[in-house]
Length: 358
Image (cartoon, rainbow, N blue to C red):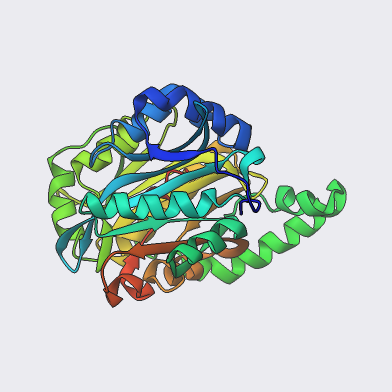
């Protein structure tokens, strides 16, 4: 908060592409080397100017011509019980360390809510991690929807154990024993029998995707739109990140897809399932198998996936051998309308693909 008698020197305003250099400078001051590729101007233009659902709403806090605060909303389309609804993804809340505890967080948050309402977007979504950010959002009126636990599939038990034990010989011995037990425990959960299902890697959207999405959109009561426009922008046109995408084909029709990326996760050399969607359980597990094969080829220690615990995919992957980690994200919403359905965790399907984190 401001000191008594001290006049506020900063102002809040809308931002635009002319502010890019100042915004990136603030990001470097606030986050340093975290998500370093977000310092790349190509990433910034892709995310804020070239979005699938329109340009971002950018909010700037300025003091004497210097950008000392930032927040933004990326327009996002959602399917809610089959109806198209416009919302946003709120992200990149930053305040320069020399200006904290002056009420900038609340000022930015309230400013953003009013701007989103003015643009006829019905609600805002966010995936905060830091406790202080969560507390600040709640003060503005944001509400928790659901926790998003990170499930992991262990690939290299020795490396995982040594990360904690720091003693390779013991890690090797224990790793072998645990792997045997793990294999016995989950081997009967693997898919049985051979199906005429083809898993192929793809690098562009085609008509099979269109037909698949028309069926898949009804599988979840609330889901972010994953049509050609969004898919191309989010994965195929990303300027700094590379994704590997496989789809399942059966009887000449697309039945599901899995999107993977190699990253650092939980301090490990990892791969993650960025997005996963299938028309039935069997197709889903074929795709997860391909994800595991991808992880083996990449030589990673584990494969991760983030999904609400109440979603069917959570139970399916748990039965398949995925284990809960200590890492948990939070999904929050600010709504301009009194709509209980938005805050029902049973209705949502969200994962890493709905964020800009991975």
